[in-house]
Amino acid sequence: MSIVDPPEPSEPSEPSEPSDVVGEHLRDFFIDLLRDGNLMDYRSPGRGDYITRKRSEGLIGAEAETLLREGTLEQIEERLGAVTGSGHAVPLLVVCPPM
Amino acid sequence: MTGRLVVVGTGIGAARLTAEARAAIEAADELLYLIPDPVSVHAVGQLNPRSRSLEHCYVEGEHRRKAYARMVETILDPVRGGRNVCAAFYGHPGVFVLPSHEAVKQARSEGFEATMLPGISAEDCLFADLGVDPAEAGCQSYEATRFLERRPAIEPRAALILWQIGVVGSANHSAEPVAPRLTDLVERLRGLYPDEHEVVVYEASSFVGIAPLIRPTPLADLAAAVTPASTLYVPPLAKP
Picture (cartoon, each protein chain N blue to C red):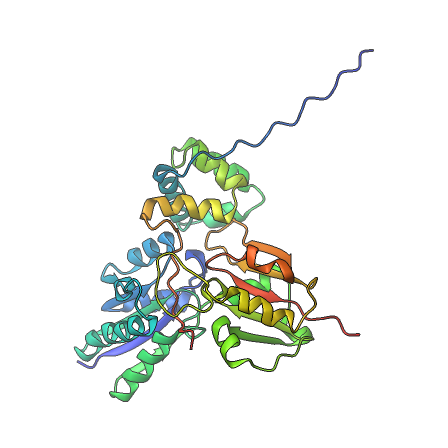
């Protein structure tokens, strides 16, 4: 019986540089989520399957898929910001004065 | 025709719009909105194509109060013209939002019907995401710059929430937020809590399924953890 080292766990793919295309995919994904029944599917235990399905439908690309599965809020906002050109998906629209 | 105003909150993220706010948005002759995330902007535009943003009211480097005055006038102009106007602000329109309250007051003072409908605020999200209940120890909530300027008496055995820590000390609008008094804020807190007290830098997520930013950090290291849009949660000190 040979002893074989278990394979190294694969590293999660690193998102590439900010891209307006990835941002558009993310924006379109979240907008599509608001359509009939999609939010329920996404919130169900099969969330990963839902993302896979949207990838196969061509709504999102590989990087958007990775971000939706593993990305942080900051990464998502950064990509969305590339679409608006603001640099921030959620630009700081402060509506309370300091004094 | 008599104009009227409904001010609504769109919540934090497009999926958190209430049915009541949605109906008000759809029913309006004109929708004026101040919403930062592009998904929510798209969603309200779908609900009412007669919409325009209030973002142009901000001028880079100018005191934010001037922007708020412009917003109030922009909202009231069509009301005075007999239109049924909906003004939509992200989050809760009555929580840490000046122009919404001012618009309602001004409209009423001019004899128009004006109402405000609640929305889901960042604080509501915070309680859910951090799993804390303000009923447990009580909760104090301040705008960060006012907290520094007015130096309110703080009960360290109750929770403390400080808003707008990412722009503390800044009164002007800036596309690149600055927090010139962040060091002062940390020093003030260090006078109230031990350096090792773990605080939480928090930012609600506007995007369904994407985790909020939750960054626990010792108080002494707070300055390095702050993001432009974050809120600070200071847990209560344990009872002796």
